[in-house]
Image (cartoon, rainbow, N blue to C red; front, side):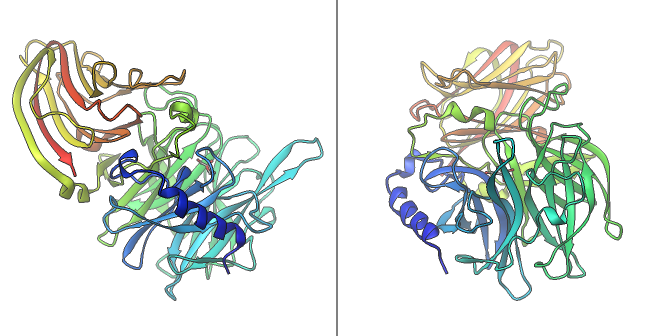
Length: 494
Ligand code: FRU
């Protein structure tokens, strides 16, 4: 039975979606149907299509009581909106249906697990959100909340675990048919931990153990965990809040990182070996993965940063876009990402240049656009004479641009949207230490109307940033102090 709250949301989104023109949205990145979007939820392959749900407040372009929006796609690039899947309409989730995940049950139904939120006034007068884990079962369109919700609450938590920071379940089914889920939680040390729960049928759950604890190493509370095997290792993805910077690896604020290690399934023991940032740019958070039918592990993230949401004017009819889905792999102990290969079919109008010397500013015929896939190899024009700085400017006109600049002496790559048209006093740039020898660097840059994703050295690192520069600013130019040589291959994405 669809509740009144969900019916209203469905009616509202259908009407207000029509007020947003196609050209006012990203072209191949999923954006919210109307209103506000944050985290990807329930990223799954079900009944022959990719399903992506998301944190959703249809009635305003600001965060509000969370619903689940819903979209499907067969290629991860062209999305079709489906009616909102969940609304905050029960006593256990009346203040929000927070993030969660989806799997297919053996009987063919789809099982959603999400965090139900209820605001509770405390004795000291403060209001805290109590968070529990809840289920809904459906057919890919309509979902029925489970009559025994919530299935995990404070009674399932060991002593010292916060009932206020207990959210974002990730579900999976083991080969023996039993179910696991991990949930982010805050222990007494005030930082984050990932709790593991198990179930024989997906409906009755029991606490198993702490899968991994932050111990105040990376930020405080850990949100949105994901855990999966990849290339002989296991990867734990988490999105910590309140991070402090560590060198050029981790930056302030919300971040997304992965812990790579081994997992002993019989004892549920995860042994960490190394960790790294997942994205070194400004806008990437709360990532989730799906296992594609062909075996690829594909990750998507909210292409936004909580601290910089004010970049976009509040009077816009939509706020929030997802990153491009990225294929993951592990090479030499590092997580590599590349845009899903489906993007190759959108490449049109190939323009290529080889060995162009750049000294001062250079513009190249045919190299422009705001929906672009561009590969760039940079090296010194003369191997014995290292250039001092190289810069690429894009989304450029007389007034605006966003830039990538590289100083080979320091091996630092910087993304900077300060001149993209922003009127806000928020961070606009991020720097990253990249692997470069003798001034050589390889980049692949994916531009959509409101974003840039930069894959460095075949995806060893990625820097993502959003920008809302007017679309007429479609110039691309190259600049060097000293002399650099570049190879460029550029496609329009149609
Ligand atoms: C992460 C997050 C999640 C929560 C959701 C609420 O961005 O804070 O932890 O489930 O957003 O919208």
